[in-house]
Image (tube, rainbow, N blue to C red; front, side, top):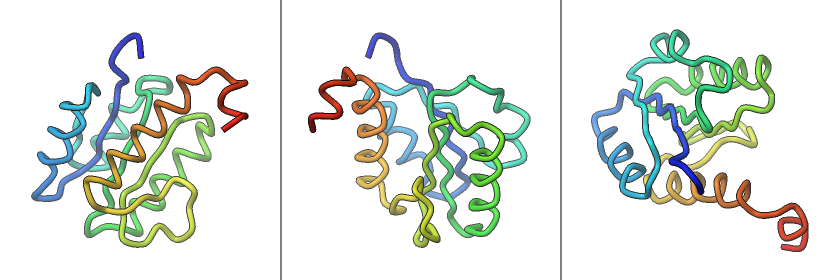
Length: 120
């Protein structure tokens, strides 16, 4: 990684600071937003290397928001941490270790040359 990957983290759960601080400690630039409405106004196409939506107690809204992002910008890297991801390919578990593993996987996979990635 040449520069810090930029992550927009949409999260209003009480323990959100744990997710923010853990990602920052791993070298990511984290830009928190408390609500999806706030993120909509800040989320310019190409502005973030990854958008992470923590579903918390709003799983239906989180799924709809992620589906909207996927529809409007299919190349945007996207993760949603939730207890039930309804089979979405961007869904991960709600715990911090699952988040860290998924984020690392997103950026490590994109850093590998194409021939090495296909050989794995």
